Image 1: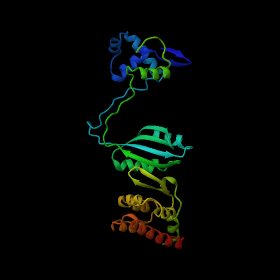
Image 2 (image 1 turned 30 degrees about the vertical axis):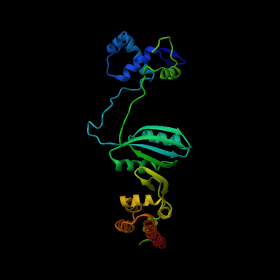
Image 3 (image 1 turned 120 degrees about the horizontal axis):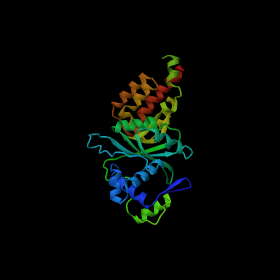
Image 4 (image 1 turned 60 degrees about the vertical axis):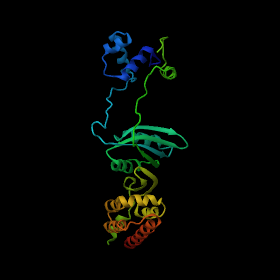
Length: 179
Length: 109
């Protein structure tokens, strides 16, 4: 791990630590060190630095909502916008607690794609009708309600040369260590 | 009807109080009405699926009653809902009720 232009440059050890944490963030520094052949103090220092630099954003719990009996409605909402207002609409959506993810996309038209959660279809509609449609710059909205989830995961640092190339470019990987 | 009441019903509303036309849950057509006058015009223009969607959910009655505060018209829309019209005949009936009511309101204004 080195500092380059005030940004943190990761090495292969950091990436290995990230990969281990992505599989199970509850592991102790000692357990991670044992697994990677590192001293627990090394693991601690590197994790703290990655937290400090915002590379590790937070530790969270992935909850199986079906098992706690929460029958929420998940929907993917495509918001077609006036290009001048697009950024503002995306920011407004990001502030709503019902909105889980927000992306802008350039396809044939400029649009915003958002993942929305609601208690039921009625509250989903109320949210979109009262809080999204009235936003200045919203031209129209298409919403697809999710009926079945086949996969949901986060980007993972797996030992894949193609992904490693992307990470190397993005985070200025230093050192000769191979993943 | 008092002039004051007619003027209140015919007022221009802020965008958060406007009526937004959807064709189904979460599918916004891009058409909205920020006054009763605009609402009348839009019912003659929007996709008829949108009229069916909102009428049978009670959205028109709710907006007319709670936002425009026109209980008389809300009752007429409720009666229309109970007649089970659909497609172009629904549009025709709805538009007729609304234009007639609009003319009445403008006479009092």
